[in-house]
Image (cartoon, rainbow, N blue to C red; front, side):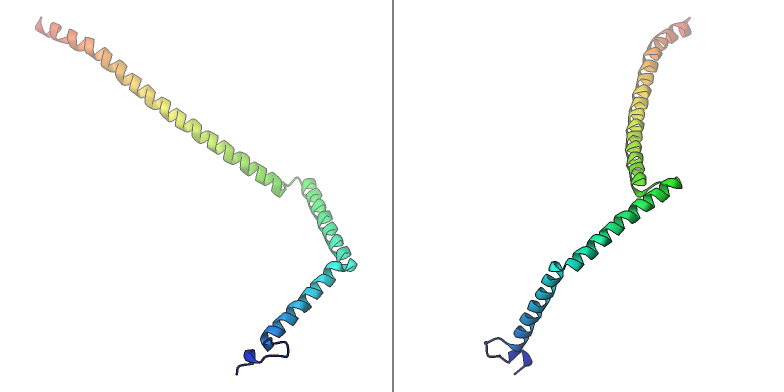
Length: 125
């Protein structure tokens, strides 16, 4: 028989029994940590220190006239927006340029028709 096949008095295999006891012990430790006022105090102090460090970093960067990550992200969003708007304007200019070229060809064709009709009369004379 393998070690996993040994059965204890409760009808559980030794491996299952060990796993169950381990899970129970981990659960008890986790619950003790959750209930611990010392852990709560330590977490509150850590989060408070983190907030103060962030505020100090922002104040230092502001004093040095350096942009924050939020400032850079806002600028990046604005640049993307500006870039998209510029692409839209470029497309509109391309459309207008094509339309203008088409109009010029039509005008040139209309001007060429009367000139073509007048040209044979002058050659016959």
